[in-house]
Image (cartoon, rainbow, N blue to C red; front, side):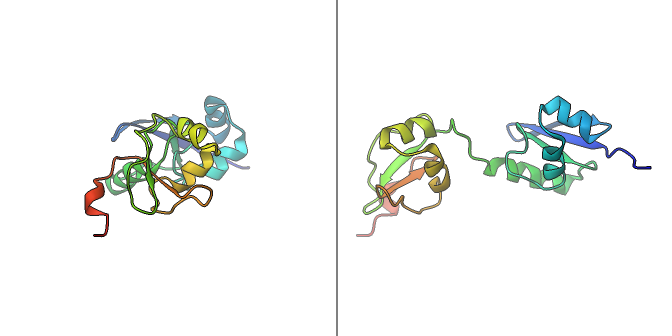
Length: 146
């Protein structure tokens, strides 16, 4: 006889962890999140950035150290609606005012937003157009070689 595996679904409000939702089974969690059972299995205890719809799934209560790690993992998540600053890769000069989403930047440069997602905050220029994408405005003067 197989026992149902309990699932705790943690969600963050900014950098504050909201009390976890408790589910008696993976099936119940999958139904709540409107995903397949297999998706729950693939995410539980895996610390996947972004979780499932912002919920991070675990099979046990997190201790304080693990909660701090969850906040760090959550902060690493890049969202499509974050502000995007674009710089020329050759001299780090700002090319345009910021875009209010990755999709708007992607539309402007005629690329897929996933290309910007892959390059955001990596210091690696895009091959297609030699641009650097950041989620924060750079203080360019300290990066430019004189």
